[in-house]
Image (cartoon, rainbow, N blue to C red; front, side, top):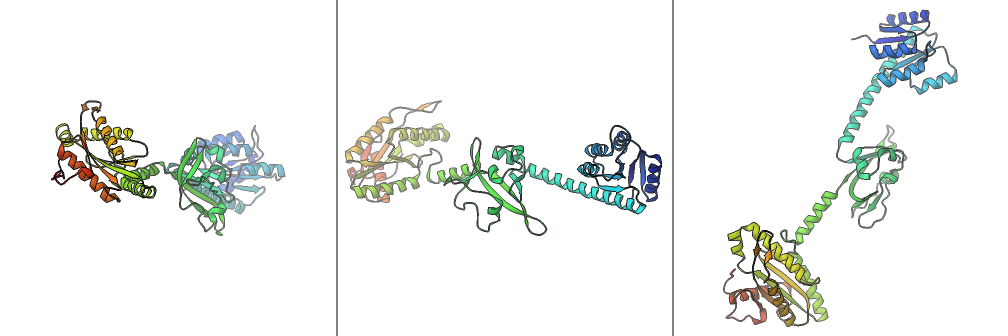
Length: 438
């Protein structure tokens, strides 16, 4: 085992020699013996001893306390003070430097041995602890979530760079402040403040709203977050602080919203799909029955759309469908519903028509709107449509019947001539569709 190397700093020659002999007699190596604070700093930096035995009152411009401060700041070498001075002011100055020991002259060999061993061991433990702290700090700083810790009073004691970015506040502005000042949370649905404190975290009942999300109020707006908290306990199991981990869930919220949207909308055109259309038709039927009003359901199918896909490709066909959807959205009233049922089939719900003639007029205007070519940027395409119309209550009182009869009427229009419309009431056995055609 390597011997510990000791630097002796003493300005009285005989005392210095005596201490050097004691150190060697205890089995340690003496790195050097110096008499001034300036020499102590320079030698400590050059020779990197394991410990410095430092007299407080030294010759030169700096005393032992100042020399110890410089050695610790520059090289983190532990210092044990050796002094005959025990006045209060000297002790206070010495304590500020956090020495690893303090021996009053004269001292015996066993006292010196104890002071050296305790100082070296304490320094070893401190370095190990600081290494662990640096290791943990590096981990906390590098993880993708925001991390904030507090003391037992709820005052912020640590926050990583992610927490700074999420809160929009710098660490220097937050350390020492109450947690509720740094994490300003409100319920996403209610907008009410959600207090976060050591007391609330310690409660067995949930302190976060279970049925809604959380918004973190920042200087520049609001941020949806997900947060978890845990208590820090000491060796007596008393609460010593808290740790909170939180993350930005904006992307997840957007994905959830997109999935919810796609559950009831067509992914290509973003029009309502069959599910949402049927829901709206159900509500419209209930309202129309109470008010004794008519509603109309129109099935619209593009004529010869398959030829577009076969000759120009499906990508052009998809762009044409989106262009058709855009024209239909801007053509009908806000209270009406335009939906895509799949392929080149669209459904329209006219929520309030005074009589069948109103639906007929709308169908005529729709066919007229198709006379203008659809501009796909790199090409223009002309395409027509066939329309079938079913009227409530004459042609049905429920969703399934009305949509089926509109479908029958639409295919009757295709059978007849295309680029036209048919009311279900006009469909006779000789006009009934014999098979579906493009």
